[in-house]
Each structure stands twice: as structure tokens, then as C-alpha cells.
Image: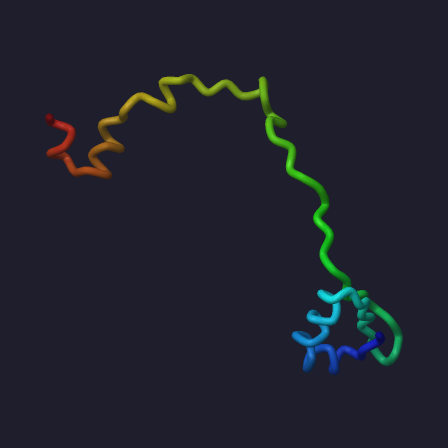
Length: 81
């Protein structure tokens, strides 16, 4: 199916529904094809652990309490106890 830009603007929801159901839609300008409206295909799964071994985060940075941050969240009274 070939659709000119002005028609595509007016009927985008309907065109997307057609693509969703497997049809290929070609968007044209002055009857010259310029773009294809096709279903999205994911590029692939994200790789986890790409930076493993390259970053060192000390446990203290994650688990030690910080009085200044505690004060921001809970107020100054909380840090005194």
C-alpha cells in the first residue's frame, strides 16, 4: 500500500493498525516512495555484565551510612540517636 504524506498524517492510527496486522505501508511524497512503515523489530537483547571487572565499587560506598544524607532524608533529630 502506498500513501502520500498528507493522507498518512490524516490516517496515521489506521495505517499503524494495518502495519500491526502484517501489512507494509509505503509513505510517499509526490507519489515517490520515501519511507516504509513496518513493524518494529528489536535490535537484540541487552548484554548484562559488560563492565564486569572494569569498575571497582568498595562495599563502604554502598552500605555505610552517611550522616549528611541521613539528615536530608530524616532531619537532624534522627542522626543524634
